[in-house]
Length: 296
Length: 268
Image (cartoon, rainbow over all chains, first blue to last red; front, side, top):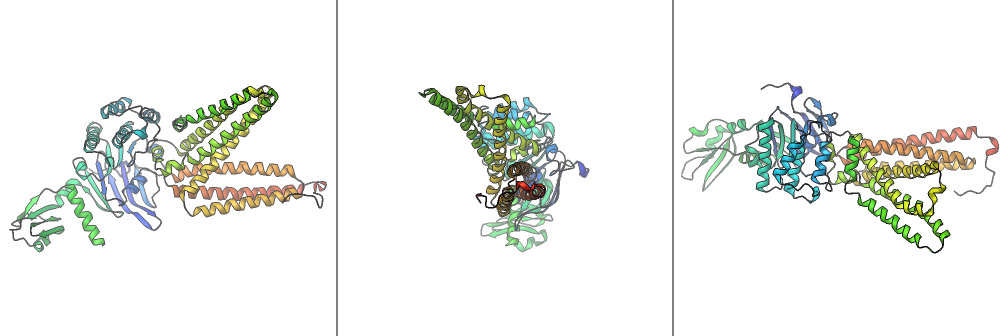
């Protein structure tokens, strides 16, 4: 689908962020189409948070331009926030306010606030409404943040590592809520996460940041088609050099056999090779690991 | 309405301050109520009532100013405001209003019992009450804005602090020099006007610096500090320039007999 540039929910062009002599983000360019779930992955310190801060107008990029729905986010932050829901990496609501007070505060700021939806979510999450936010558990804080972010029925949801520090059950609840929102309203989602397994079933498009540079910006489907994981048993006479035509991104061979991630061609023609489905985590580790190797 | 929403949010969790103020007021009241000499009690009550109220209001303004934005920034909680459809002016004004309201109410609660006991309220005209409240509130505003700027400067730990120190040092040195020139000329009332004008200008500058820190610095403490520093350096510089122009005008147009006598004593 070719969309008009001006109507893209997220449009980052050559974005750079510099802290003194450190280049935290270097010429990052990406777009998110309406209704898409874009997952931005990267190791700690890769520049994800800097990009999110710029995306939300918290910080001015030192280079480039960021637009949400065709409006420059730095200059139009207030107007844009009517259409954007945010879940921050560290739950940042005032710690002395109770959930009930937070709902009242946020509800008064948005004309399109959905009180029934928020109440319903909070009830489902079983969050105590009168306990101060600062005294809620990490998981409950995340759930309250998500309920508040979905309250104004946003057109774009920005989630900065929303499952960080959550147990498996709380993580599942976050993803279920997102799936429900996507099914019901088709909200565009921009999410940064370390939870690669969790996001795999949700993301349409993947961006991988490494040392401030956007290494990958492609659809998940495209990435999986382009990259193949193969393995071979020790009894098979496979020489890793035979894989050169398939442009291996990463390979390992030893007494227990070997495995590799290939980036082109159809390796099924090579005898003795088994082709496997590639998980996002394996792909991420291979891509970032290969890049770290090149850098070192 | 959004400003008031921010103000209400700032009050959440700080209502205990009002209880503390009421406690201070009641303790004073009881102490004075049991004073043996009614004349002494009356005098003490008048003094303590006004003093305790003003002092408490100013201390609260100081503490509120020192924490209202910079602590949120340091604890990475300021993003909560920026993620809402709130203009920077709404965030800043909402917080300033909350600080002023809290300081004023606490001051009133701390002073009211003693003022009622002393009967001071019967001796004061409405205009006097307005003047006392006005001076108290103006003091709160100056202290709140000043401490906001200082807390941003200190917490950001950037080299811009050198510019701040230089600007303030030059400002005070300049004000001292201008004041001495007016004292030499015996223009004491003009000196008072100069100080008042400079105080008003500095307060405006602090307000602008605070707003710009939120509007342009946002979640970036160092960037906010830069805006505060540049705004204050400009304000203080322009203030001195205006003060110098004012003093030059006063000295040029002063009547000849207003000159200070040679050998007159003054403290330098």
